[in-house]
Image 1 (tube, rainbow, N blue to C red):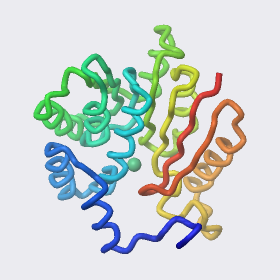
Image 2: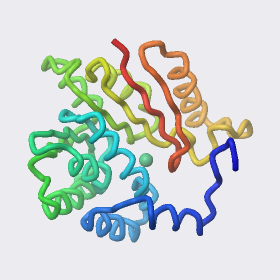
Image 3: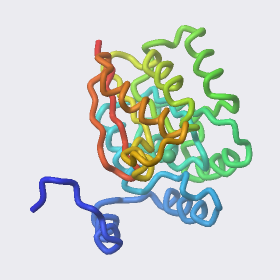
Image 4: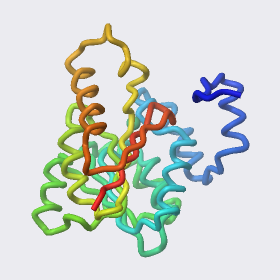
Length: 221
Ligand code: CA
């Protein structure tokens, strides 16, 4: 027994996947195809996808937001978990990656649920706010360029309804978040981001060691 989160050996991780994650066949194919890309580590892990899908199902989220699509695994996991009238507004700037994403969304039959916005995400989020969409989202997933996390967070928090859930990816930064020897500007800003959420009374907070670290934040009313 352990009071701490286990460090997963490869064998234990494989076991977890084998009995703990039911991956939709299109998700499985997408993961396998993306794994051959040089940027493969940008893809979320299967257990993270399953966890996010469960959160979407649990909360009954119908209006979802994603910042950082890559090849579309997380968007597909979320879209599959939403009801038929659910909508995911997905932000990215990369045409090549999101073209791959679209083919899998179509193959899984959820392309109508996902509305892709190909533009800098801050612009898209500011447009949503200008269009009066503040307080209208149930769920938001932030997984784009880490230097802009604080700006994405502020906008996403405004777009969420009270009680809405935000999930922020890569908050442990491959372990570097806690390495005092790493004082790069990027890491300092990411530590600042984590510390600022810890102090933020507008949210209920839980950082969990799934994959590269997830912060769950529920918007308080
Ligand atoms: Ca990520």
